[in-house]
Image (cartoon, rainbow, N blue to C red; front, side, top):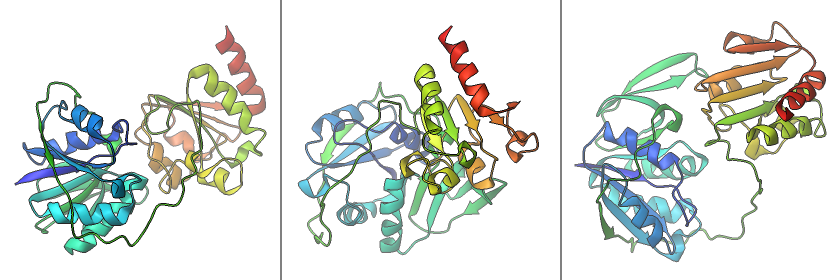
Length: 311
């Protein structure tokens, strides 16, 4: 049997996390298929055929999949999923909405946020906000898996010669419909894919003070993130939230400003290559994982940093 990867896309291009998921799937099976469901997505399907290790692209082109609604998509995956021993997707907001439904329809347990794969039935995932690793063995015939994309390298998007097969699901019911979508547009990179991120905590103090982070971000070409406490305080929007209840990131450089280092936040940044913390509290918990720790007033340090970057 084969492994099936559920592609994420915006109806124009594939999301990079799909390539990470394919790398994870390679550790389960040599025969990897990728499902691309959407509307007017033939260009994406063509791109997918060139991905290394993908042997077949399953194309479901229908208006009902245009907006990624969980109900019709989970029904489609269940319809074709019987042919696979593993169904994988990246652990994103989208898959967290879809795959639990698939697992329920198959009456199996979902294996979430996998960071390593030992064998076809044994997996490693972080628990207790990253303080411990759990080794999990599944006896289910079909494994429903979400993977932590930062733990797997991106598969090469060249060199493949996959075939395209059209699939459909005639048994779906339209129990939901798309009404509207509100998108926060930003000229900065996406958090999940950005190489540099600067984030602020509740200690930033206000929405206005968050602009100090934005100035630094613009100089570095970085994304701007926030802790849950900062979001709850109204200093930042929910799409900026990083941590166990937000986005998991793995940038080359992570700059944490006025962030104490709650376990929930640390769980979201632990895969960062270099962590720089700026905090007036020399005993802040984040010092235990920071590669560099600057003790001082952020209102003095950040402007000095911008001055140096201008040089």
